[in-house]
Figure: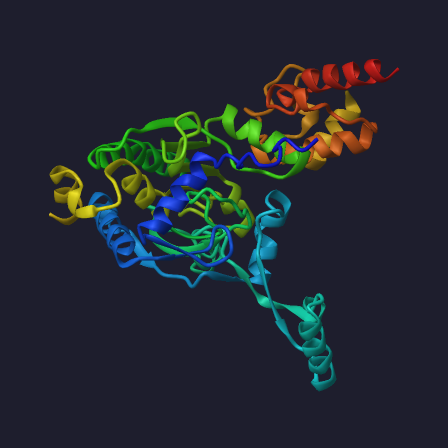
Length: 313
Length: 80
């Protein structure tokens, strides 16, 4: 049954309304694809200021920064097990690898408006799904960890195929991450400290927040079990801020303990020869910026002085 | 329960052989991780030709050999 009778305008969701406001204010720019937006200078200004704030809160830890491009080697992606857990979110890079006659077919298909992508073949590149994915094999190559373990500071554009009118659910977005690799005690202490620091940092920005246990969107029946386990064992917490809904606030920071999952997968060893444990705190850069625009308005000059001082003081 | 122990040895990645575990020993204490428990679940389904309902896809179901035995018994009885 068609729920929308003729002549009655379709009610826009709160998420869609917020997206329209961001377009109208020239903060985000429509590209024709949901979840793929241009960002204004003002938006980037907020991202940069928040990035600096994260550095301020995490800087004393002396993390090693590594900037990976937004692509990961397909060989490493395959080994990562991402397709077991999140096949629905992955994005692979394909390119034309045919000869001249294939090119003619391709152009004819394009001209006819038919599917031209059958000529495309998988390249060695997969779009990075989370900033830390390229890190683990890189760390494993360096041999056993020093006694104190290691701490990395990462930032990357990430891709997840989940087109949505919710501006807080982009397909391409930036994730900053601190990743702790070491003994179970070391990584748990790291996560605990960021659970505290994250709340203090976000509270200083004058946004309402809650912290709750969470799960990743694992695929299928095995995924249901993974999600239940993750919740039952408190492996994932999220710092939530209402952006497009009060009932379903948006996860802006996440605090994850992976146990020995990545240590075992990539054979990362502690100085004692044990499988390393890992934990990370992730910052959804665009989500935090959107939360700030939502709560303080589209004009950053009119944001509360206390918030401006924290970001630009 | 020997069959369950064999599947546990194959998929559970436990620190000790399953034969050394009492039926009510906590498998998570014995080293069963979240990720391994999913492999265990799938391995049990194949070996016993059963499908765990969604309500059983949680930590508790796979917390001990006895718990697994009970769960499989329940599914088999429900199917009979």
